[in-house]
Image (cartoon, rainbow, N blue to C red; front, side, top):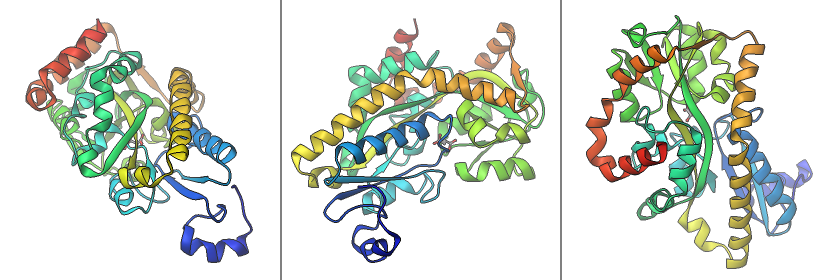
Length: 328
Ligand code: LMR
């Protein structure tokens, strides 16, 4: 399915809207926002594309558009529903306008590490969350891990009070807004692709993200250190439209979903390695990482964790309890 001549592309582009796909193949455009190197999502998307194009040649043809080249994740759900793309993997924080259930994942210090996140997602409750957007025409196909979030600013952050009065970029999530307010900081929701520029020009002072995103977007270059708080999780849901899935021939759908599940399992198992590699790459590139003492970290917990109270009812105390039981 891969690579066709440029001349042939021009006319087929009208009907297939994807370069490099053969006539008769179902085109799957996958739009995402991160880089591809030393990045859990970038690597997983690439592997998925390679496997689909090798094993489903003649039937299905996948094209990946990374780095927000096609859509931001704020736009991509609508694009999925319009059929402009067939696959996306936004952070769980990006689904807020569709369901509030995923807010559980944004609550600070809810999960002690990515293994706890994995175990929760594999539970009946976690698996059930993949089906929660069906009434809006969307189907979750699996969770892809990124990792735990760290916090950075244009000054060193050791105590939560150091964040006081600073402006922080957050993903568009009320929980993350509340979390920054709890720090006495000013939260600024903003698309991922705009963050580097906003940090560089001082539109915001800081941000929170995972090692791979801080490395991939070079945030560390325009920040005075990254504080290793591991205060929250950033994970993805791979999502497609139900219209797209329903229109597939059952055998094709099965093969596609089998490849998806295998790639998900394989890459999620390797996420710790990619995470550490990105952390190390920040150090190698001259970035500064601030490690907290247990006492300092406890202070961040004390300031941020009360945010749970505001959201406990809509997230469900039973879900919070289930997540906490996994931590123990
Ligand atoms: C962000 O906006 O910071 C993340 O959702 C980006 C991503 O996809 O990891």
